[in-house]
Image 1: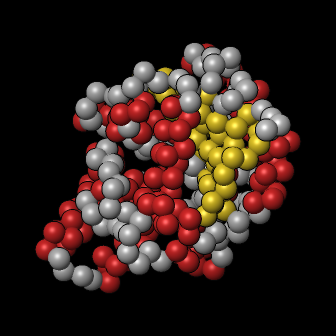
Image 2: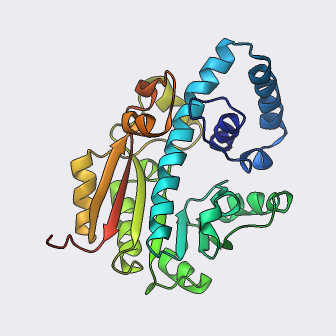
Length: 276
């Protein structure tokens, strides 16, 4: 909900990413977050600054930059012939309803059944999905991802783009590698994997809040360690960038990049580097 809220804040102009648009985000907000958005949107339209708006802008910048970077990787994969998109831990993702490039693409949204039940109660308020969407409910404590995707119609012989956004930092390394092995087994050569990861665990007050919410950070990787895990699963790194690079690409104005200094996104391709 908080991530959807920050996307909504960015959509109404509350970030330094001027081209960011995600009109789907506000549809998924509950009454509390909708009321907060309305107050913030009124401030933005009036031109009035406040500490609250400044704080929201920092977080909206990080989420808008992260989203824009992943969107660019998805567009490149689709332009290269990818016809399937799997979003692991899809949450309140709106890509299937807002990205015109996904027309004709089969999108598989994988998440906990309870989260998907909430989302599906809200999608009727959106325009018809651009992509062909299949919801894949998976309780990772009891269900097998490989079998769930197979039942849902995912074709492991066709090019797939995988999005793993805002998830792996909450997993143990063993759990991450186990899921990565499943991804590899269902990825034909040339498939794309986009992973958002952190180079450090949250500490101090942020760590206490996450633990209180039941989502403590469990893992961290250096870019070299992440590349090693990906290589071990048969993926080679195409690009690995942090928030400074994201801001250079998509932002204007004084983005507080230090707020997201631990955040990175790696884009990897299934198969080994061919000699030039």
